[in-house]
Length: 392
Image (cartoon, rainbow, N blue to C red):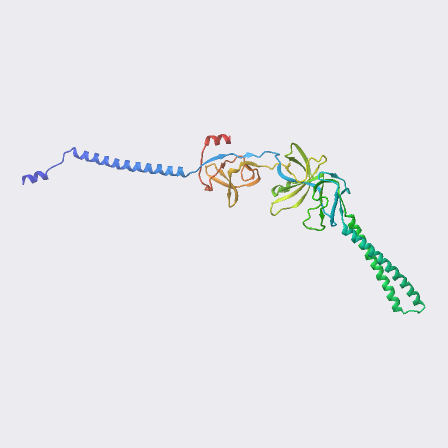
């Protein structure tokens, strides 16, 4: 009984209560520290994840396109006149008088053809003409005689008309025979192959004794003669520059065999239409080739002195992206976010391109952008100091 009272009357020591509060506070501090540490780690991980997901890019500044650079395009040189000479009569080549590289004058004899069959046809036509003329003479005499007898009522009018009609028919046969003789005489003139104009013989595709078959569609021709005193140069100019092509404008030509020489040509005419497949207009240049330095068939580089286009900048081809809207360039905005801009290419130079619109010299362009780059996406600059120096 006494022990129970003592147990109920027990009071803990005074120092024990503050110790409990201290222990509780320590426990709360430990839990709070753990939560804060975990929160800081989560925030750091999130920030690191965002930083790792942000692509790192190189930034370049567009350069102003060189002024008065002009437009250089490949061209093909052709003769002012170029004629493949075919035979008009069949036979055998009797002899040729000029070879390739020979300078000839208009009407000069190049070769002659032996035509035994044509000669026989001409002789036969002449004999037919003689026969027709004899028959005509007899028919004429008969018609005149019967006309005089009709005046004395010695013959009937029907018979007289028949004799006059026979004379007219014989006269028509004479005209037909004369035409046949003239035709064969004209063909005889084609036995002599002559130059159609002053020029140079650029090809000889026959030899003595060769069989000549006139009208053969696979015939390559006996000779080719080209007038090289004046040359024509054909250049395909892209549609973007077609409006700047002016008739009479000078064009500078260069060829590999004369690396230190520039030939001056003039725009003489254009096709006046854009080719459906090439997307270019055909431009014809004329060139005085008095010294025969250039040759038909060779290739040349034609430089057109076009007026410079305003606000044209140059970028490396690696800065371009092909998107559904067309050629696109990624520009870095002031908030380090991507701005995708569609650009218009004025000239593709291979490693670099001239941009006519879409970007300017003050823009910061992303070089070699990843294909996954999207509009408004944040990016990091790989070398901020170098980019700032380039902009400055």
